[in-house]
View 1 (cartoon, rainbow, N blue to C red):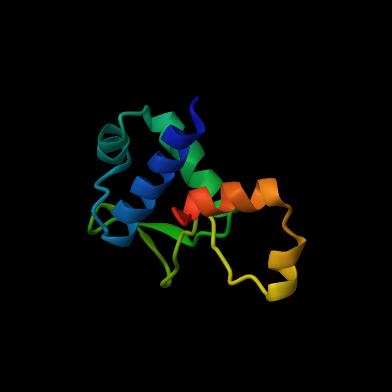
View 2: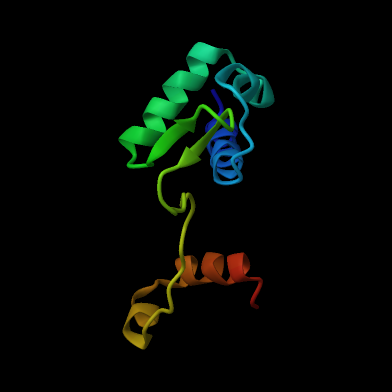
Length: 102
């Protein structure tokens, strides 16, 4: 499976869970276009990652037991002058292209 498709599915799951808009496990699986058994694998994966996922029988929705946030991606940081000096010219050129600085 394409990793971006997988990560986007995890993000969508997180969004639906935070909003308590998943519906039953069957409905949740349909929203994600996956089987119910695959959904359960994803939920178990979220739990292994530390997500406090639970199911509310009265609302028929998954939810988080306490507020949390899924983070997937990269964070940038400000480089020190020393770190900037250690970047070679080729890397600096690519770095500038990424930032669209010329």
